Image (tube, rainbow, N blue to C red):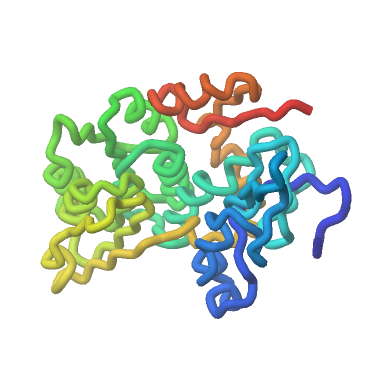
Length: 293
């Protein structure tokens, strides 16, 4: 692999073809072959790495790695060399959700100092976005969720205000807090009704990023966007180039500005079912499975 030698510590992220117009422009997250390469279940040539006892192919290579194992096959495109001294044991989650959250705020939206932002959903992506907004210097950072415990946790990571949208009118509260609407908004839920409220909660000229997976056929009224100066974008992986962005996040972590370790709970592999249960109930933000050596 170019730039890597045996013994290097790496984290794995998404893969890309490196040849399409988006990849050549440095926008690998928008690789036109992203779906086939990351969720197609095969190598780029359609082959698989394993077969079962009957000789049938075992599909893998999901996210360009299928690292749900003691060993993973990856490429130079999605192997990220870690800086010396980086916490290898917790760097894995940086490759997707955490870089998506921070990157959407810092790269996709490019939130400037002094701005206001509202973030819906306080999972790993949303909470990483909150930390990213604090790094960016946003002065009003509003977290939205349905779970009070998560909202209180968001405050410890940088949220200046919290809204439980089960009990409060999201748009009305944001407009009141900001004095007219947020400059930026970031949805991690994919829920159409939340996105609609989020757009209503922004000011004219605002920029809104969507990363949550919405149901097919989901819509929002176009009148909320037309003649308003608002821009709605669908962001992928925080517009990150992982080989650059993950080391940057680790530098921020080392400086005490990006405490992503607080999102992580580690489980030995034999506690897989517990990790899944804790994630489903919200007890754990980001479960990290430690594979047997």
